[in-house]
Length: 48
Image (cartoon, rainbow, N blue to C red; front, side):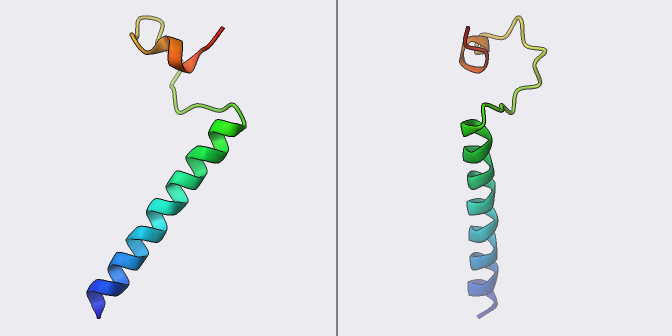
């Protein structure tokens, strides 16, 4: 029974994290630290 409870709690945490990322993405926020001028993925974070 404890395994089920722990699994449900972990699933809830994962869902909340994903939801936060999606909401932030829709608001235009990014998880980028912004000091990535030499980063190969800079175009993905900072579209011009």
